[in-house]
Image 1 (cartoon, one colour):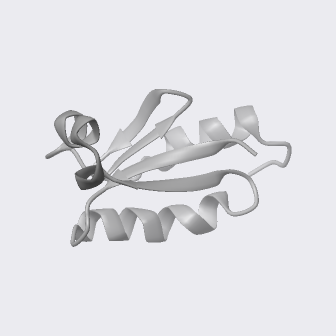
Image 2 (cartoon, rainbow, N blue to C red):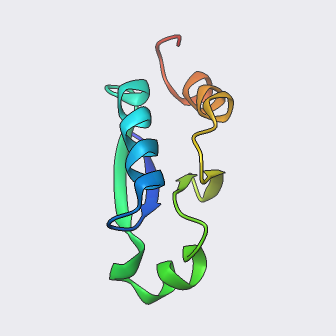
Length: 83
């Protein structure tokens, strides 16, 4: 199963809200890997004030808020079931 990477930070309310909204939309269709940017210097350097950030196949899907249209395009292009 392909996966989305969510770059986040502990205590980030925007991150928590995005993950909460994201999980039901992709459940059973894409895996979600939550990455704490403070756990790796390169993630912190890349995403410090941009979190939350969703990445798929090395491309940024959205920052700060969930872009459901972009997510739906990913699901339509990479998942067997219709949305």
